[in-house]
Image (cartoon, rainbow, N blue to C red; front, side):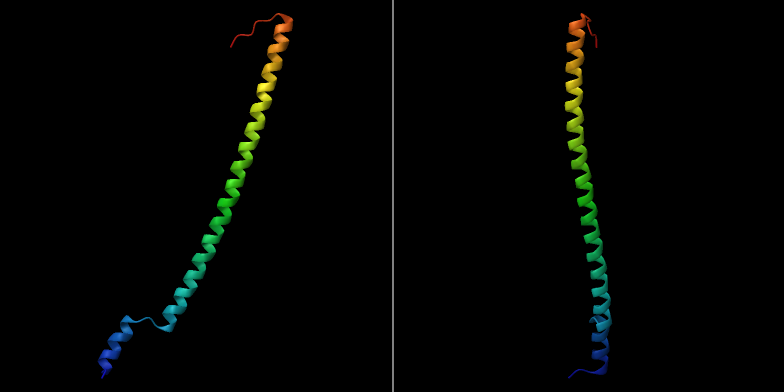
Length: 82
């Protein structure tokens, strides 16, 4: 049979309803933080992808302009130096 002393020792070790309630609140806060981080990472990944697409378009445009400049220089008889 358990004595009062045994019960007191058990109460010090075992989680109370309040402990469980606090743990649930902490878990909910953690879940919200993780969700916010996931959304932020998704937005960041989209921004990086958009920048990558824009960079590719600018590179193509620069290449096209360089080709045109070379053609103009050739027709005018100008030697371009780099």
